[in-house]
Image 1: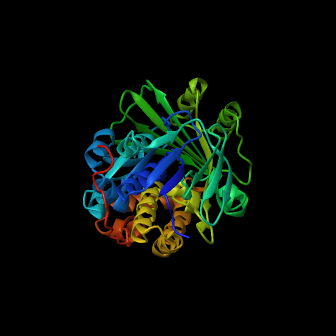
Image 2 (image 1 turned 90 degrees about the horizontal axis):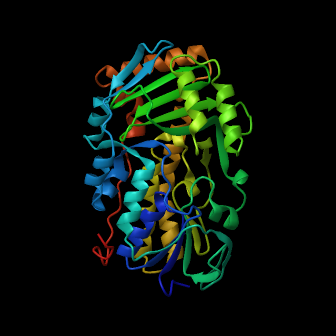
Image 3 (image 1 turned 120 degrees about the vertical axis):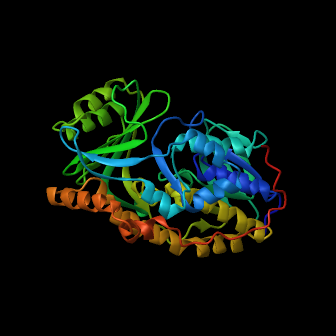
Length: 405
C-alpha cells in the first residue's frame, strides 16, 4: 500500500537525518526529526569532506558556509619522539585528486549547517527517543519516551552506528557489527599552548596514535586511535580517561601534556572502530540511512559524505516512486549497495594505517605517506578510495524552494 499523508519520522539529527529531511521537504513530504540529545551536539572530531557529499552540499547551497567554518589543511606531518618531522606530504595532492573540492570541517559544524538548512518549519523532538515501532500495512505506530504515541507513513533510522531504530526493527547491533580491532577517542580542548595552523600532526608507536589539529577560537582537537586487542571499551567518562592514560602512559612527544588535558574534559568522543554490514536496509515501512545502515568506520574518512549520499538517494527514490515506498527502498539499495561495499573494503585496508601494530608496520606506513610527494603515486595508492565512481542520480524535485533559507 502506498504512502497516504507523506509523513516520515527520521531518527537522528547528525548528518544523514537533516539531509534527508531537507530533500524530503523539497520532494513534498512532511518529515519529523527526533533526537535523543537535548540539543545539537557540539565538539567531536573533524572530517575530510569531498566527492559526492561535497556535490550534494553544493546543491543545497552550503559550500560557502562549509568553507567558512572549515579548514584548508596544508600538510599532514608525522613527527617523532622529539617532535621532529619524520615524513608527511603537502595536501596539494588531495586538491589535485578532487579538483580543489576538498575541505576539512568539524562534523558538529556540518551537522548544524544541515539542520539550519531544513528550516524552523520542520518539527524536531529533542530530548526524546523512539521506544517502540510497530509496522502495519498502511502505517507505522511509533511510541516515544516523552511524546506519547503517533502514526507515520514511514520511519527512517538515521541515528548512526548505535542506531536505536535498527535495534528495534532489525535486531541487536552484534548481529551486524564488524569491529576492526581499534578504539578511537576525540577531545577538544581550549588554550593548548602549541599550535600549528592548517597542519595535521600525527605521532605514533606500535598500536597507538595521537593526532593534533589546531582549530578556530583557540581550540585544539586531539584524536586518539589505539589497538584494542579484544578489550571491551568502558562507557563511563572517568573509566574512558583512565583507559587512555593507561594505553598512552609511555608515549613521548607531547603525550604527557595531551593526557593532562583529559583532567578538565567534561565530554569525550569514545567508541570502537566498527562497520555495519546488513543484507537489507529496509523492512516494511522502516528503512535505514547512513551509518545506521552501513557504517564504513570513522577511519574511512567518508562517513559524513556517505550519509549525505544515502539521504539524497533515498529521498530522490521516494519522490520518483510517487509514494510506492517498496519500490523506492529497493531502488535505493540497488543504486548504493555495491558502492558502499567498495568503501567498506577500502576502510578495512586503511584502518591499520593509522596505528600499525608493529614497528615494521610503522616504518612501512611512513614510507608510503612520504611517497605521496612523488607525482602520480598518490593517485595510484589512494586514488581508488578518493575518487568517486558513483554517478549521482538526477531527480525532479517538485518544490525546490520549499525549505526556508
